[in-house]
Image 1: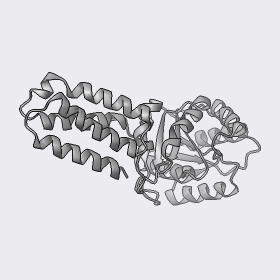
Image 2: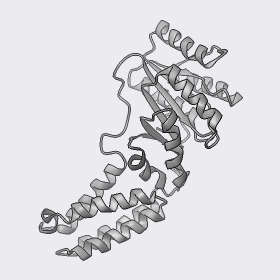
Image 3: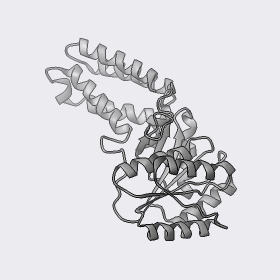
Image 4: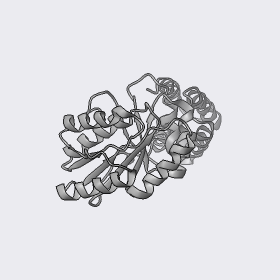
Length: 280
């Protein structure tokens, strides 16, 4: 992940550190290389433009240019801006603030949504919570069995009632959770095919019924620039609170990951780094 970005930034960092005093021209030349590296990684153009403008302003501060080691100071600014673009130091993770706490995952078919729900359940269990997995993906027959197995593997509760409607599912699962004193409810939803209007309408209904505290979009790290319009589409019907990127261990360029926070205004909560339940 981020190989082209690492290469671009690495070259810039080395060049800046070799210099003594830095001029505005040196800063602009370095940022031009960074810009090309980000665009080459398929980062959204508007995100790149904003990132470069903010970084340039911070780098041209007198305290930076007149410091004893201006090259190191510029590298520090670049690192801080990149960290901010990814959501900041405190952007990761979910804090359970009340009971019951409801989490809903949304995304395209094949993004790894159902598996990610199992990973979240295990993570919450390790943190001392009592999760409930709820199978709301009616469009994929195998999703019910898959989530049931994930619940078993993670050692968490599974709501096994075959509900007649989404309303029955949501209300039944809530009753089940209260009876069992389960504090975190995790709802799977039907995977969407791009911008399917009918399925988006259904998602809007599910959101109104479930009242999620967290709505996380699950995105394949290899999706590229398509991630932003896709996330914006989901955000209109099910207001997002963050994202989970899967296949973070892949050789993907990482443009979608770098673009998400800036474009959607929400943090990246977690990343999936493997196929096992603990790989989150």
